[in-house]
Length: 118
Image (cartoon, rainbow, N blue to C red; front, side, top):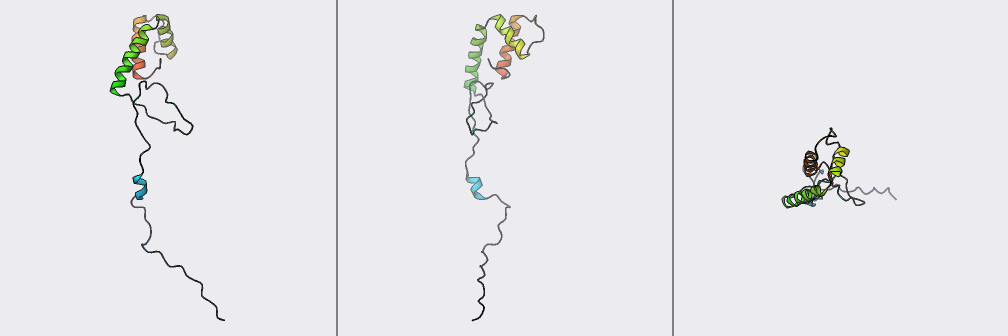
């Protein structure tokens, strides 16, 4: 009864695995990043439970025209007192004696730029 030699596992062929290039599986996966056009980029996006909080919202050309038209209608229907209140609350005008027409124009530009949501 001689001592049996333990089985030695054979070395794998192909050498060592290097990461000089990306594994091909990583490159084949589709991107999770998508761009979606929205009508109002000032509004925060709806967040689902597992959704990332860092999202990018772009305004398409068609959406921009529609958005401008809606803003013009919405701001022109607001009373002067309401416009003054919104502009003052958002800190867009420093002087309280600013004429309503100028305040309305400032509010329109701020909403168009996406600084204020009305």
